[in-house]
Length: 220
Image (cartoon, rainbow, N blue to C red; front, side):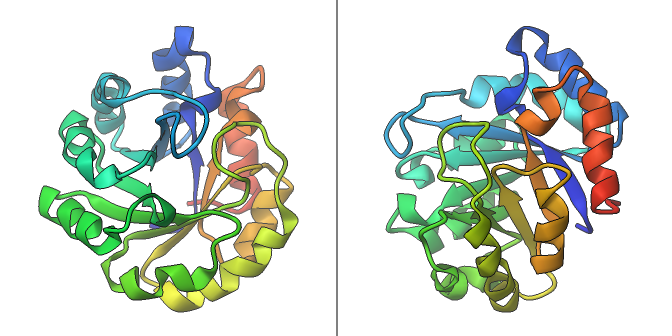
């Protein structure tokens, strides 16, 4: 996938969602990240397949990918809904299901890219048994749930081991507290996908904020 900055709509103005997503797509974004939370795996409740479906056409027309990040319990029960709604890549949490391999295989059968996320307290070794199934290994760099949290510095130490486990063909994605300062640190540590929410959509000019982070990591 190369080096990419991935705008997360969690911090977008939902009254202007299509407009703001259009702005970052025009600025060069090639992956749009949709955070789905169920109020159980993480405290907040956010959005579901309807928002994915509403954005999918716009994202596809731009030649980009829509990535659903499922912070929900038992994600395997809902994977088909999100793929049907238009998610081309789906990431679920290793901590959220005892059936990680089953969920990964199901996503392959559905024709989607497979991502597995691990929380800051979860060791890199949690990805070892599933590494051969992955398109994306996502390392949370904040505790999942709320946007706008500060970057957890010690999470950098995990990126090298994750890269060693998944290999060079798999994307290593970071999510949480990513901005022009932290993205280059994560790049140096082994990441190549950088999810940014409030650092993009929490600004007056999301397109320029996207471009600034992209420049900081010399993104494709």
